[in-house]
Length: 194
Ligand SMILES: [Zn+2]
Image (cartoon, rainbow, N blue to C red):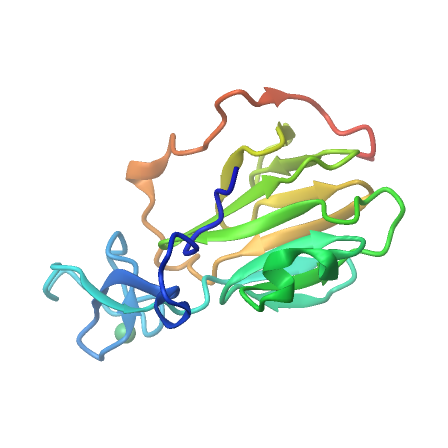
């Protein structure tokens, strides 16, 4: 099973090409956005016909120790993520989480067009997510993916991180309210939660 993005035969230089729209100041945006995520101007006047362009970073991961990782490509999270083939071939960046509760290769943060998703790769202690403003944790079963919205918390063993999209001012995901990918997942509170 391989559900990583951009690896289905595309040449390396094409991996970050996505369909998007340009604002009047030539910033490249998610076609679902009503306002430019860079300058904030309305894009209702702009042509909405998506064109192929280079995907910008889709926000940042912020670890519980304050370390930040710009999401310009896939990231592999774990106690020893350097062993992952995608890290070794340069298509993914490693995020080392030094704690025995974290598996050597624990989870991946994948970029799927303009969406950020997390997937567990068979970790011992599981990967859990909690959307911002909610209190219920959902376990991501191995091999499944869950979309991350800005502010979502992710727990791996005793380590935590948060995803920020930089889109808080212009996000319009109203049509995606039910887009969480939760098939075959079950709700469970992580035993590590304080
Ligand atoms: Zn703009």
